[in-house]
Image (cartoon, rainbow, N blue to C red; front, top):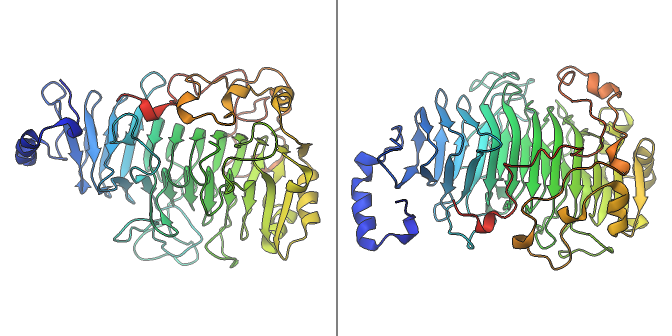
Length: 477
């Protein structure tokens, strides 16, 4: 019989802890036929395999150091301890092999019981590699003592050698729930944090839900990803910094109207560094086929005033976004500094063949310090489409988006559909994607992007079916 740590009596808990040193070492491969307790993971883990049918508990900052590999079988469930802010860190040179299947995904979630789980219950997953960044030997946020990643090609540190093709492992069909914690102001972990991760790393079919900060954040690196879901997260859905140059295709963001961060929550927050200095490599990562669903289903108001932009471009960012749809955010596109405008005017960053639906025309474009809003508008409208609000069910129907994937006013997260209708088989989004832009032919982009017809994350195939979970608050694990 399996049992939860929460349901143990004081006496049985004392006995269990007394035997843990010899029975539940984190360096042993457990025998699935004999041990039904939760197995603790803490400190520095040696190479090992976690098996399905067992439950594991991450306590405090738990590392997979250089030369070690943590393998997770399909169906493995790992809990992050709330009390100790459990966090899993794959350090430079370490690897995680987490290859689930559509019918048997791997789940990393909160240790709280059903109904009590909430965003930020644990620290999430951090993967650190040796790929290039535009900072000199940076340290990742939220980890103490400092954990470093990547390096600047112009000033390589003695502590690492840059390796843009490095593999930190593989994540396929993985759900990460209720993760990401603000440890101190502006010092947070995210659901999935990537620092200097190389393009040899495989990331496909990953769902980040109920995050306590950003869902996915890249700090430099060259790694790619496909089939990403950000669901009901607190801050930004896709956040990039420090010269990330990888690729992402097929991404979904669904915002819950009550969840937004005081710093301002965006679907995309794109940055080049912690300041506006001209440091390279620039943040030139490329996204295609993204569906961003904001908190507004009808009208122009949100449930939380901290929602901001569909796309927020900052400090020399030169990210490219193609073949994507953004609807239901209170504001559209913002370019924060003149350095951003210069990047897009020079063609380093590209906004092409996207559709933006804003609730009202004055909220379509925003300009930061030293920026002319007319320049922002011109850059967008040259090769993209803007649909004027107000937003209503007819807007979604015209696009071909099923309204059951959007939160209705007053709808709670526990009433979101268990099998949302993500497929798009008619309407504006069903056709019109284009992959002829020169950006797709750049080195390390050629061959990555699938030449599909649909704009946004979904066409006639629901790639979220089977493995994604939209009611994890009450899910029994």
